Image (tube, rainbow, N blue to C red; front, side, top):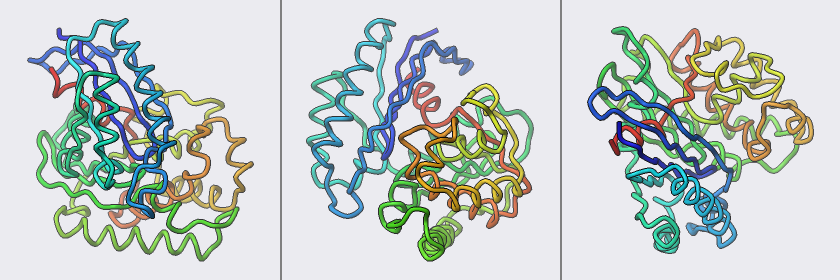
Amino acid sequence: MTRVAGIDCGTNSIRLLVADVHPGTGELVELDRRMTIVRLGQGVDRTGRLAPEALERTFAACREYAAVIEELGAERIRFVATSASRDAENRQDFVDGVVAILGVEPEVISGDQEAAFSFAGATGELRGDDRRLVVDIGGGSTEFVVGNRHVEAARSVDIGCVRLTERHVRHDPVTAEEAEAIRADVRAALDLAAEAVPIASADTLVGLAGSVTTVAAIALGLPEYDSAKVHHSRISAERVAEVTGMLLASTHDERAAIPVVHPGRVDVIVAGALVLQEIVERVGAAEVVVSEHDILDGIALSVA
């Protein structure tokens, strides 16, 4: 077994996984998994730059993660950065800060690489010969991957819960016009994704990342977030629609009072739920299989 650390820095959150991985079998034994909402993508869609306060929040999380990695003695580290840092003019400031803290350069990966990591992490435990559509709804982008053991086709499109919230939401609760503007963007992005990925051809829809797991936790009626109950849960298309409708009608304070909604997702979960609902409807899925294992697990496997 090789002890590795994988870090996934997205538009909304940064996450760490330290695990022992068998490079031959892909077996992964988790030692520490944590997530911090840093909103690195704050304002990037509008300004094209990473905000100084967003960079400092991210660097603070990196310092915390560096201490954990040192304590657990990880032999190798891989730091992957996704949508926000791909888009930013000043991404070198981000790179320099990460190198100074962690001693590794963040890899600003392409959407296709992001999709491959997500697919590997999400499907590693799944058995059977069914064809899967893996959907990773992030803060700035969403990845669509079709395959079984291996990726057959993948596409990343620029729709995510942070990007869509910043682009369209000005009221609390979200107005019908704002919701329709979000839906229109998602539908256009689905058209783009469908040009490269046969999104309606899969047998199973697998959903990843915070928007999906939060909707699942609400749908399951959990009194507090429980990753073991969320992982591999199956949420019907009807429940996805019901939860999305409830979130659309809710105020910021009402969403904040839902125990399974992380404080850093309160303002963006409506857009995330709308993305999920539109995907479920477009592909005609009866349900979504929810996975807690995602790009982070794929990164850890790739290190080993």
